[in-house]
Length: 91
Image (cartoon, rainbow, N blue to C red):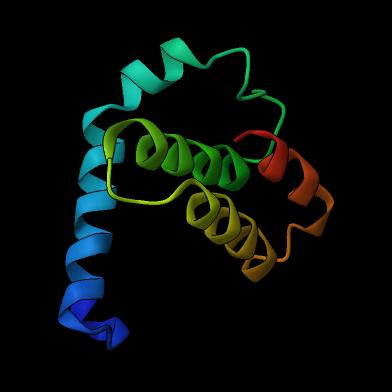
């Protein structure tokens, strides 16, 4: 599936690591941050926040500003403009 996206090998590796890390620590992230991730938020926004939190707490080499910036940009890409502030404030 990643090969269809025409990503560079290092980007493919990052996406794979991010998905794996988010899934591996999903229950931990849900439990630790249940107050932060509002269940009334759209599932896409919940997932963006969860992926950002996985990067923040479990993937050491990613700068904080990059996590925030990319999370907000991802929300923009899926046209969830109403939730940009929520995504930004989550980190």
